[in-house]
Amino acid sequence: MTMSHDDACTPCELSGRREFLARLGSSLAAIGLWLGTPELDAAGTTAMAPLAVDGARKSYDVPATDGVRIDKDAEVILVRQQHSVWAFALSCPHQNTALRWNPRDQRFQCPKHKSKYQPNGVFIEGRATRA
Image (cartoon, rainbow, N blue to C red; front, side, top):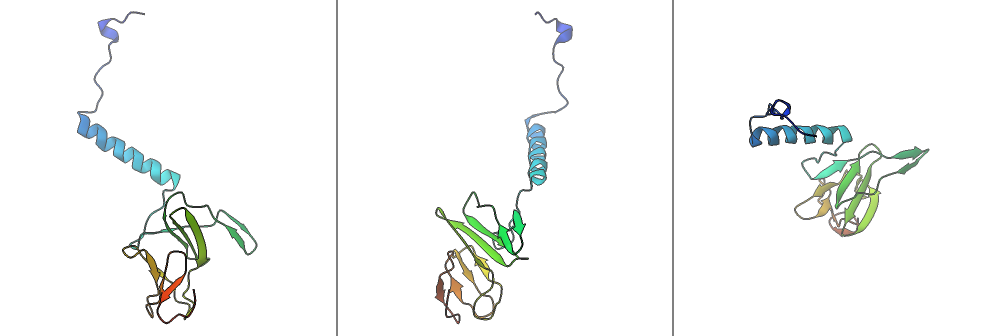
């Protein structure tokens, strides 16, 4: 098939590379929102919801990357770090205060009495007496 000059592609409406990249970025952001990309809070944790609920039993998706996910409604923490995954209660065993993730130190800490826990839930120090 031969193409005549009249059949040649007309310049698209994008004025340059910068505009193309800006539109591409907007499109990718919209796709991410549509797919449900998780948002990180200020502490670097991601909110999560169970995939399935069967009575009191809940099933969660295993995180694809290292990080901390929290289901505040069910008070569950799910952590993936260095090829391991742990799930445990959100509340500190000392006085049931919701734990917070400290991304700088890579550990959980109770904001009320400063008990500290490793990412796998093991007690480090503080007023709590157990993991």
